[in-house]
Image 1 (tube, rainbow, N blue to C red):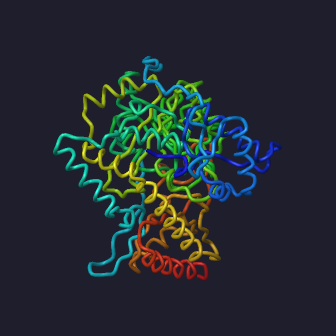
Image 2 (cartoon, helix red, strand yellow):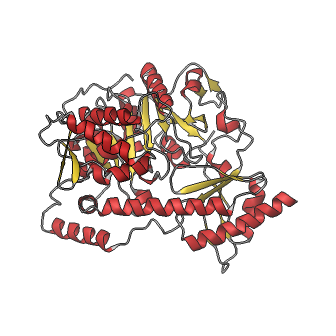
Image 3 (cartoon, one colour):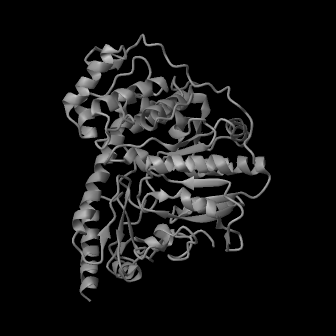
Length: 501
C-alpha cells in the first residue's frame, strides 16, 4: 500500500495569503483527515522533506506538527509522525451511490518529417519515440514472474490492483474512492472509449465533445472513431478557458454554433498537452460550475501527474468535484512504466459508475490479470514509487538540458513547463527548421500539427490557437542524455543560422 511518507500529498504554502503558513498547513491536514485522504495511522512526510518541497522553513513544519499533536491529530512513534491511530476514522467511500444516469475540421496529427535516407544516423526526438521509459529492472521482471506463477497456480497478489490505485489516487491526487469504484483500463484512450460508449447510449444521440485546440490528436481520433463530433476549443497558457464555452463551439458544418453547448469536455488541466500550461484552481472551479450548469461531463486526462517536478501539486478536478457527479478522471502509467505497459485507471461520477461497470463486464477487460497482478506487486513493494521518483529526476534533468542548449537564441524560446516527458520550443519558421533538422538526421514534431484548425481559425475565444507564436518544435525527453545533447546541438546550429539569415 502507498503511504503519505512516500507520496506527494496535496499540500500547498501560499505566501501571498494573510493566513500564516503554519495555520495553512494545520487547516489542510485537518481537511485531508476529514475527507478521508489521510487515514488513522498514516505516516506523514518528514519535516525536512516537506519543507524542501514547499519551499518553507523546517521549523514551520515542525511547529505545525506540534500544534496538530496538541489537538490530537498526530502522534510521534517509531521514528515517524503519524495520524493518530485511534482517531475516529472517516467512513470509507461506499459504492452504494445513486445509479441515476445524468440527463442527457478533422482531427490533426502531429506534423512529422520523413526519415533521412537509409543508412543515415538518425536521432529521433519525437515525443514517445525514445526507449528511456521502457522499464526493465530486476524488480519489475520479478513482479511479472511472481504474477505469472501465482496465476498459473490460481492465486493472486493478495491485494487487488484497485486497492493500490485507491491509495495512489487518494495520496497523490486527493481523489477518495473505494477500490471497487475504480476501473482498470488499458490507458487513457481505452477509458475515453468506454465513457463515450456509455454516454452515447444514455443520451441516445451523437455526442458533442469539446477537445482542446491545440491538443492530443489521439484523443480527437478516439472521439471521431466512436462516431461522435469533436469540437475544437481554443486554449491559452492556463489551458481551456470556460469563459469561451457558453458562447458556443464548432458545429458539424464547420461553422460556429452558438445554440448547443458540448455534452463532454476533454481537458488536460494538470499539464496541457502540448503547450504545458497548468490550469489554476480558480479556473478549475469555473469549469466545474459551467459543466454542472450545462449538464456536461468533464473528462480529465491526468496522463502524467506523477512526473510533475517543479511547483506545488494542484488537486485533480476529480478531487474538486465535491458532489461526485461531474468529473471522469482518466490516468495512465505509460509515461512512467513505458509504452509497452498498457495500464491505466478510470474514476467516474457516481451516476455513471453502474453503467460503466456493466459495460466493462460485458466487453471484458483488455488488461490481463497477470499484468494487473504484476503492477499490484510492483506498487506493494515500494518499487513503483522509487522508479517514479527516478523518472521524475531524469525528465527534470533532460528538460534543463534542452533549456540550456537552446537558450539565448533570437526567434526561439523554450516554453516553461512544470513537468512531463516533452518540451516545446517556439520558433519563427517551423517548416524550415523541420526540413533542415531532417536533412541533418534529427527528427522532431511540429507544433502546428497539434491544432485541429490552423492558427487564427480557432473560432471565438481566441487563446493560444490564434497566437502569432503558434509555430514550434515538440521534443520528446525519452531518449538518452547523449542523444538529446547531440540532437539539441544540431537544432541550436539550425536556429542560430536561421536567426542570422
